[in-house]
Figure 1 (cartoon, rainbow, N blue to C red):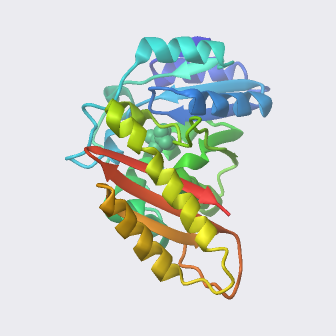
Figure 2 (cartoon, rainbow, N blue to C red; figure 1 turned 30 degrees about the vertical axis):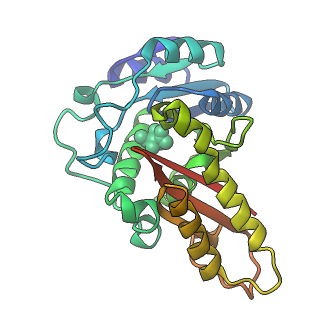
Length: 278
Ligand code: PAF
């Protein structure tokens, strides 16, 4: 695996390998088995796998964990080199944002100002801006994003479609611990006690999906009951909701299209998100 820190060096290397089908797996580092599965998927669908590690300040609100976001460089490099990654691009902030990034991608509010976007205003502008910039730099044929960040994947897919970017977006399945907790870099913030309780989120989503299978389903009640149940267990949920997989809009129980249940909730100081398609 070769590592580049500058756009110029990366571009020079890639320009000599134009004939190889190129994939991109963008990350913020602190890699876990979920990321490595994305890497595997990239490997299976291309001839040259490029991973990026960049903790993108633009997608963090001032009170969020940008400064404390886990940075585990040595472990990440070791893991990537064993996961079949060919090229690692790891720019610093001055390289990717040499001047204030005043030109930004503004995703459709209908998709980006709901759910995560409601509780983290500007988050998807930050994500889309850095992703488009990485797409421009790497010019991949294929890019892989995890379904764990379900709304992010949907927003990026829509961006790629609307800007006619010639990139195939592949979705990686969410990896879970044995007790059902979705793997996430932020799990490492959990205390031992919180880690035990953390399964409540995926269990609640599962219970909501089960309840929604009933012939006459009252979605509002399922959502309200779930919010209350999590509050009773000491969580602070932001949202627990059942949406259409396509567009993440409120569902009409009469037109039974594919649904997804999505949730975000804080346990102590740690905010976890998860989802389940059904
Ligand atoms: O999912 C992430 O880790 C980030 O949002 C991404 C896509 C790497 C953009 O910074």
